[in-house]
Image 1 (cartoon, rainbow, N blue to C red):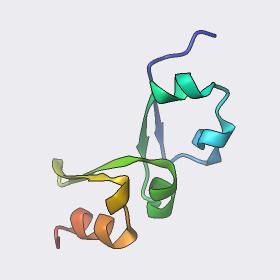
Image 2: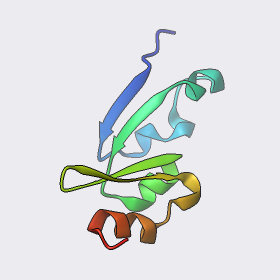
Image 3: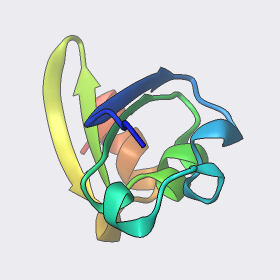
Image 4: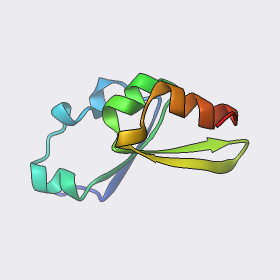
Amino acid sequence: MNVPDAAYDAEPSVSVAPENAEMDGATLATFAVVVISSELMELIGLCHRVVVMRAGTLEATLASDHLTEEELIAHATGTH
């Protein structure tokens, strides 16, 4: 199977959920997906790392152990 190294999706749906991917575990381990979403719970459920941008600048990069709605909102609004 010819698989790209990365994918991009803005405001995704369940189509990008790992359980819907038609790739084996080794492929998924080396595959990057850029997700742009305003749905915080979707980001928390899909991502192992989230980059928060505000006013066109990088505000924070949060690992999965720091992915909460409160933490994302604080960085997105500049109140962190």
